Every structure is written in structure tokens, then in C-alpha cells.
Image (cartoon, rainbow, N blue to C red; front, side, top):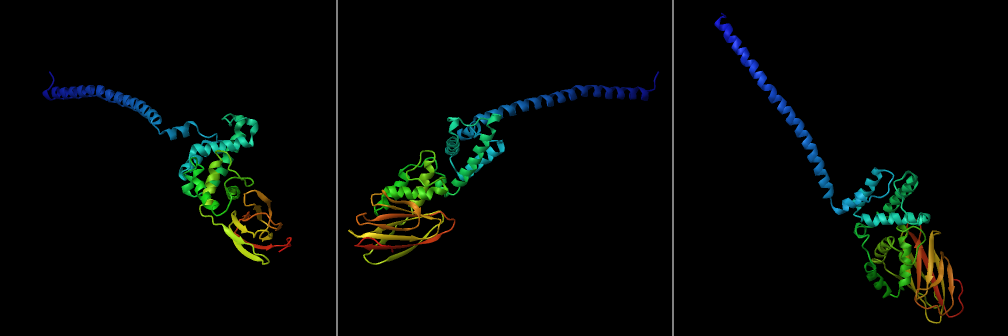
Length: 319
């Protein structure tokens, strides 16, 4: 027979072995629970991400689903971020770039570049145009930038009526706005507003130009030379109303920089002397009054002009 101590030790070992055998199922169950929890977690996260995408605001979904044709996603996101920071309507801006591209490439017949490899060059042109238009939009004050896409004729007609009450013809005002819109709309100054979406920038230029515009008046006097000096801002314009006595001819001379241009209009807004360098103009009696003189400064710095005029009851001579 075995001693009592040996029998007790044997019973203790048996209890330990029994406990170890009971832990194995517990450990296995915990491991299985961890694996199942991980799988279920991934499934739930995937479902939540899908629901969040579906619940995104319509504007964000439009940006994601109708993003501009860009050569890289990074350029695309940078463009959208800048538009958001500038508070510029993204739908209007993308139409602006699309229209500009299609104007350059009428052979596309209204087809925008796709993501296909053969359209890579066109997508790069689109990106370059977007950056150019964005730099132009940035020149507007924030209050006007935020309204691009929703501007209408009524937004600038109020200032126009104030100036027409001073004797300035609406056609002349349109020429003035076209001259001032050169930093927003590329190309030669236009008279009437262009079609949408470019029209939004023209209206913004009209509001910027006409709201604070003051008309300089000059009165030609018989037999006396009248001189006037005016400062014209860089890339800006000045409008002058020149009064002429009835039955008198007029000699009008403008001096300034080679980067300045002048255009002369009759009182009814029709063109009297076409746009060209500053010069001396001699006019016969009966041209009407007041004449409207538009002087533009294409330079990058403000510059002075000097105007000299004289009314004569005899055929005109040089000032």
C-alpha cells in the first residue's frame, strides 16, 4: 500500500490536471469569439461607410460623382477645395471651364474629354484653363465671388440708371464695362455682355465698375483752351462728358502714355471716333453734346492724362 502523503499528492496532481483540462475549452471559446467579433466589426464598418456615402449632402455627392476631368485626383481635389474656400459656386465654375474648352476646340462638337488615355492632352488643357479662370475669379471681392452663378441684369442696372441720368448713354456704359472686365474676361473689350456662363463675370465687372464711378465733365469754351488732368488706374478706364456749344466746332486733344487708348461717342451712344491711341481730334459743328470720351489704361500702373479742348465758331484748327 502507498503512504498517505503519496496518495494525497497524487490526488492534488489529479485536481491540477483536471483544472487544466477544463481551461482548454474556455481558451478556445475566447479565441473563436475574438475572430467572430473582428469579422462582424468589419462587416458593420463597411455597411456604415456605405450608409454615410448615401447620406452625404447632394452637393458633395455631385462633386464626387460629377467631378471635373482632371489628369490626377490630387489636382481635382485641390481645385474643389479652392472653390470651396473662395465660396464660388462649383457647378457654375465647372460650366465656365467646360465652355472655355469647347470654344477652343469646336471640333469636339460639344464632347468633353473623357478619362480615356487618348484624352490626356485635353484633360491637361482643362486643368490649365481651370487654374487660369480661378486666378481671374480671385480678383473679385468676396461679396461678388459668392454670387457668381446667380447674378442677373437687375444687379447692375441700378448703377447704370444713375449714370444715364447724368447724360451717359447705356451703350457707352456697356463699352466701359467691357473695358474694365479685361482682367476677368480675356480678349478685346466687348460692348454687350457675353452669353452665359461668361456673362456672370461681365455682370460682376459692371457692378464693380459702375457702383462707384463718377463721370468727369469738361466744358469746351469758345476761343479758350480748357485743360484738365486726370489719373487713370492700372487696367482701368475713365469716362468723360465733353459739352460743346451749339453751332461750334471742337478741337480735342488727349496726351498720356502709349499704353492708353481712347474712344469717342456721340450723345446717342453711336461711335464717333473708333478706339485707338491718344490723339488730337477735330470735329465739325453739329456733332451734338455732350460727347462721351472713354479712355482706357492698359498699363500695370496708374497714369495721368491731360485733356485739352477748345470750341470754335470757325472751321476747327489744332489745339
